[in-house]
Length: 430
Image 1 (cartoon, rainbow, N blue to C red):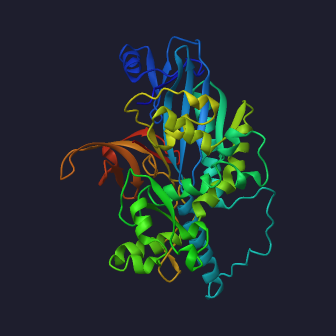
Image 2 (image 1 turned 60 degrees about the horizontal axis):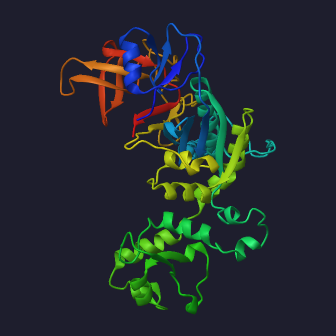
Image 3 (image 1 turned 180 degrees about the vertical axis):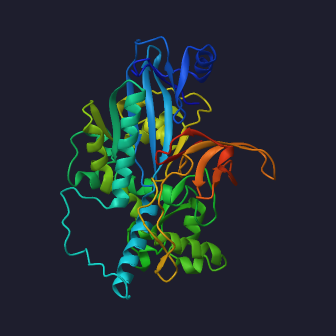
């Protein structure tokens, strides 16, 4: 379980403490709750204290980024806080497409003309699409937040997905990457992730897997990743140079899945590659010592220590300092989901694109707004009980929706109690 962040009475970050110690401080009146998510307490009678070095580590991903805080104690390095940050790049992309269609539709109707905007805009140097920029912004936001809650002294970032050859030869360059001892490692790792680390033909897991050409080389198949998959040795031998359609003639569902997955675009890998330098620069701009490392080193560190695959664990194993990190058994990271802060759309539209209803006049109703972390005490009815969660919807008439414990409950605003203002993220314990 994550440790609890601790602040002095002057809001100076101290070393995180265990949840049990935080409970004793709170029950003894020596501390107060400063923030619920991530849980932070503030000491009432202490203005300073000794701190150890804490490293901020991230493992950027296209959909989920692992975040870890690793402290250097006398007994060694230990993971004290971890989180999996889920990005909303796809949601942003869909919102932009919706806005684009509304603007274009407005030009063809008898409504106010909206001038085309694709010819009168210039892009700054280093511009990224909004869906990618949001990933960088999420990471920078959480780096800034954690700087306020913990004594971070350095940062480590995984910027290159796979580069294990440099681990063997620090001077490798140019075509030596394709001719080295570990040539093809990046492709194999990509295939393992894409095909769920099992034989695509028989579904065997936890067995040695071989790279298999979907369309055999003897029939003109290429070495492109769109023509590669993974198979166990018996299936690979049995298929040989047969066309995949003939080999899976008796398994039409498997054939359909293999052909569909083989054509999947590399958009996730492209997203990581496009944002890796922007992410590194965002972290580096804080001014603390920052190291940049490869994904190959991360995997080597994780597998050598016997840790399971997870985003926050990968983050803890980034870099040289990740070679020896203690992660307590059953460690539960904080799950953070980027939700945004609402919408700028003034008026909703019907299915034909025409305005529907009036623009909202206020953002808060009875002191609440969408996204706030609240406690609901439902006095009666089917969902009677106490719930803690995020406000999913608010209405002017005074009844709100809360989403908690995988259910949605509607109740009067009088039954709600504000815990923490919405900050654009949704939290849960993994």
